[in-house]
Image (cartoon, rainbow, N blue to C red; front, side):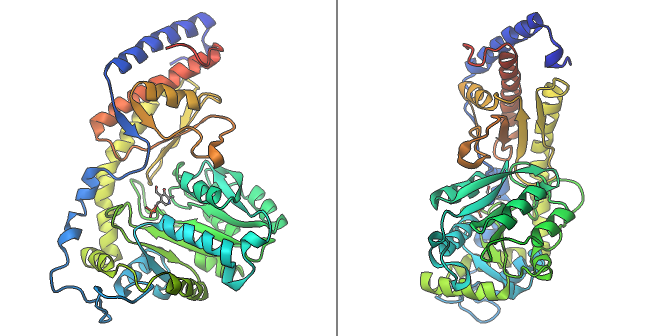
Length: 430
Ligand SMILES: Cc1ncc(COP(=O)(O)O)c(C=O)c1O
C-alpha cells in the first residue's frame, strides 16, 4: 500500500478514476443497506425469546409479596433492584428501576433539575445559560437532550483514557453555570474507549464551581464486552462519596441491548438521599411502574450472573461482525494514511476518523451507493464536527453478508473522498 500523500498527482488521478468506476459498479447493485444506528440484530433479539414465556398465568408475585399486576412499588421489585445493584456494584436501595429506556431517565432528570433544581435548590433554568461538558466524539442523543433544554454544550476531546481531564477540570471549576457532564465510561459511544482508573478518580474528585453540578454517568455498555478480559472501572458512586461529592453522580444502566430494546428494563443509581428525592418526583408522575416486565426479567435471568452468561451469547453473535469490520478497514484502508479507527473490546460502535473535510463526503458517497450511515457530525454537539472527520459505524444490525457489502462501499468511499480532497476536487462529479 502506498501512502496517499506519497502518490504523484498522476497516480492520484488514476486512483480516483478507478474508484469512480468502482463507485458506479456499487451503485448498479441497487443496494439498500443500513448501518445508521446501534440496534440489536434479529439474531440477538432471539436470544431473549424465553423472556416472553417465562411468566406462567399464576406467576405474578414478587419476592416481597407484591402483586406485580397491580399499582405500587415505585422504585422497582426487590429482585430486579438486586440484579442491577450487583451489576453496578452498589446497594439495592441506591437503585431505582426504570421503564424500557434509560434515555428517558436521563431526560427526566435533566428536566427536573431545570424546572425544580437539584435537591430542592434553585432551578437551573433560573440561574442563567446552563452549560454541559460534552466529551467528543460522543453520543448524539445526549446532545439532543441538551438541545431540547437549550443547554449550551461545551465539547471536550476524548482521549484513549477518557475525556481530556485538564480541560474538564479547568472548565468545571471556573464556571458555576456548568451544571453537568455526560460520560459513557465503559465502551464509550462511539469510540469504544474505557475510562482509565486515573480519569475516573479525577472525575470523582472534581471541584465544580456549581454546588448543584451533576455527573451523568451513562453506563449503557457496562457488560457489553466482545472480547478481552473483563473491564472493571472504579465504582463512581464510592469514589465520589470518598472525594466529598456524594450526591454528584447519577448512574444509568439499560437492558435495551441485553433483552428487547422495546421492552427492556433500565435503572438509575445514586446516593440514597438522591434516590429519595427522585422517588418524590416519581410519586407525582406515576402510581406504579410496569412490574410484570421487571418480574419477567428477574425470572429469565435469576441473578446478575445469569445476565453475564447471557451477554456471552450476545458477544458470540457480535464478535464476527466487529472482526469483519476491523479486518476490512485494515486490509482496505491500512497503510494509506487516510483513516484511523477504533478496535473496541466492547460496546456497539466503531469510530472512524477520515481525512479532515471528508466525513460528509464519505457519508454522501455511501448514501449514493445505497449504504445509509449515521450522519457525519452526529457525534458532535449540534452536528458540528469542525474537522468534518469523524464517522460512527454501527455494525450490529446487518447480517454478515450485508455488512461485508456495506464495508466494501464504505472503504471505497473513504478512498474516493481522500483522492478528491488531495486533488482539490472535493465535490467531484460521480
Ligand atoms: C451511550 C448510550 N446510552 C443510552 C442509550 C439508549 O439506552 P436506552 O435504550 O435504555 O434508552 C444508547 C443507545 O444507543 C447509548 O449508546
